[in-house]
Image (tube, rainbow, N blue to C red; front, side, top):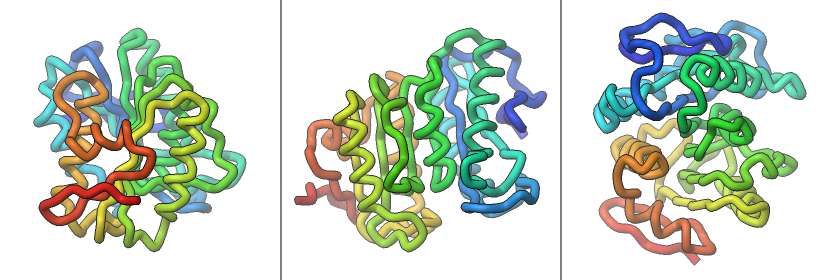
Length: 240
């Protein structure tokens, strides 16, 4: 495995030398609401994010960035324990202790999107890209103040709720977050339909937030639009 992998907050040994790159992308995969069984790298939620990590490695050369997938101790969020959030924060602390306050963008899907949103208050975090995030109605947003946030959610998602993402985005903006929302027309939770579009939006958003390339047009438009921008097959339209 060429990525440096953070397991229970401890960066594992990998091909990259410590301190390589000028920024870090922390990748947070999904899971489920409850579950104390161990998270494994071959489980579908973890496998789902591997193409994103691969695409990020291609977009951000090793000299510029390190890509750090996090594997959780447990598969579940587990109520107030918020185990994936704890693992994400431990990983960020470990990376900061090793590398200093290098800018970090968090990329998370589903439960990992929720963990990314919650972990945004860590001092090294510059921005969050949340894909089909799990956004309970009482989810806090104050930690997102001063950060940049991109949410991409498919309108055919039957696992997490797109409208909840847009409500959280509005609340975060009210707290001082610079936020962009992109609605993927026909997109569903697994990100298999329009997989290439999901990856292009996610990678473009991450590299854009890090200043390593231009933002995708829909993401850029989303920062100035009161409503999420809709992206469909071959065209981008604004929803109203």
